[in-house]
Structure formats: C-alpha cells, structure tokens
Image (tube, rainbow, N blue to C red; front, side):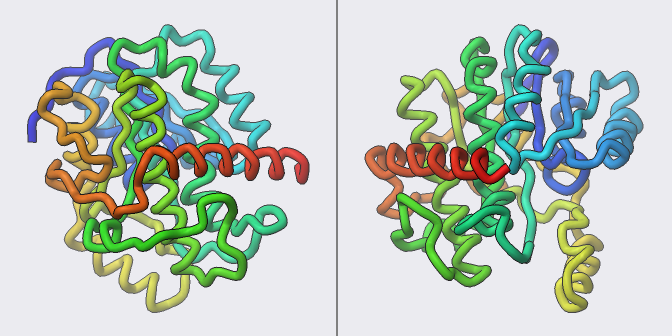
Length: 283
C-alpha cells in the first residue's frame, strides 16, 4: 500500500495506549508525523509514548489523559489543543469488547466507548481539522464481512434493550454514517473513512472472560504491531484512496450497506448530539 512522508503533520490518536491506536502511532511516527496519544491512564499513555520512541528513535510523540465518554473532558482536551496550527489526521482508535452496564440512562457503556467517544472527539476537534489543508478522519471498524451485512438500525436513539452484539452492530453502523456525514458536510474537505485494521496486537480482551481472554492471547501470537492501512489512509494522495466509506485492511473499497446514505447520516449526527447532551446533564 502506498504511503508518503508526513513531516510537519499532526496526528491525534484515541485509544493510543494499546492495540490499533498504538499501532497507528508507531506507523505515523515512522512517517514523520507528530503524534499525540489519548488515553484514560497517564501511566499507560506514557508507556505507549515510550514504545513509539523505541520503535522510531527521535519520534515527536506525547500523551494526554482524557475520558472520551465525558463531553466536558473532551471539551477540555480540545481547549488544551487549541494552540496547534491544525490537526491533519484524527484516528478514532478507541474501542472495547463486552463492557457491561450503562454510562447514563439508555446509553450502554459499550456504545459510548465504541461510537459516542468517536463522535465527541471528532465534533470538538473539527475546528482544528478544518484548519488543515488535507484533513483525514479515520475510524476503526470491523471485518468487512460483518460491516457490509449490517441491516437497518435505529437512527434516532440507541436501540432499547439490545444485546451486546446489537450494541456493537449499531455502533459500527453509526460510525459509517458519521464518516459519510463528515465527507458530505465538509464539501469533501475532510476525508473520512471507516477501516478494518486487520489483526493487530492488542490487550482488548485481557480483562474479559476466560474464553475471550484465551482467544485474544492466541490471536496475538499472529498479530502485527503495525497497521499499514492507517498509514496509507493518512498519507496517500487522495486520488489513490477509494471513494467508499469502508476500507478493508488492504486498502480496498468495501460496499456500504444500503442504509448508509446522506439523509441517514444527518439523522445520526443530530441524534449523537442529543446523546452527548444527555451525558452532559447526567455528569
């Protein structure tokens, strides 16, 4: 997959302390970008930054602590970053599997981590992204075989009483619609894609049940510490990037489900704002 140097570019990466986020930081730092890792934990963020420097000596990398499911904390982060000239690449890499409970009434914690955190961060960083001459918003998705088969989902609220798979499915659907909305509403100034990362080394399943934990340990035996599709989507000339919202781990286009259309994207953006408001009120 094609890449080019990113010297002088700034990349902000959520979930930057492990998994896809850390792989993104290593790859983009290797291409010369200044990388800012976002993590809930100061110690894990610092450890990840050290790992990036070990992989690319001299890398310009730093970490910041933020709870991406708390709107006020995301606004604080955006204020702290406001002195930047621009943000050129935003990687929404945060994610979870099997998080129990709700973060607020009718908002499952899993949905907040796997989608709403991406919306909140993207929304608050839009002014800085719009200052870039070539902004990219890259959001982690799932295997194309799953994403292209997702059927119609609730567009105005989180599906009530959904099981764990239903919550994840709706989060994936809303990621696709958020990305389409960014492409449409920016007049194509922002390039937004949902990508399948491939098999990336991760501790995502470390705290889960025995079966999931053992599965994650086994998968890590064959996983990579890098994510080449992020490097390509962040750096390749736009003419070489497929026009579909979904991109597989080899940089190839994936057909979107039929419900992924501009009108539905607008509905999801509005609904996301309402969910963010409810989180603010519950804080």
